[in-house]
Length: 129
Image: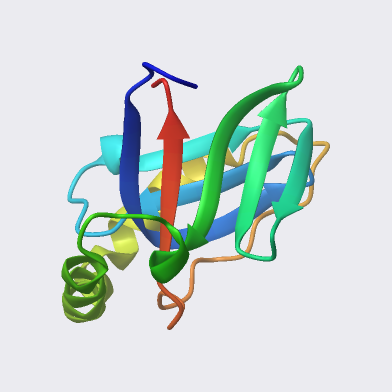
């Protein structure tokens, strides 16, 4: 995607809504706008380092560990992730509210309540957004 800006986000919370929808909350987020849903029709594991999500054959986003994300300073992301663990418990109500907003399809099973963030930090890479 030459010439296309890439946006990187530190993922603070991740939850599957169903087989084609993924909820994620930006680490250090403090508003409902930091809760996102990725709707896709295909996913692919790439080089055992990335999970890439597609819709209609177009790449929507990729998810990877910080060290595999190709960020300029991975140590900054790792520090931000450690700090997020201190903040995250105070965001539980907000994250649950965002998750509930997206989990409205009655044909799909109810999502799990968000747990404390995973100990494995991830970065979502969104091309051309």
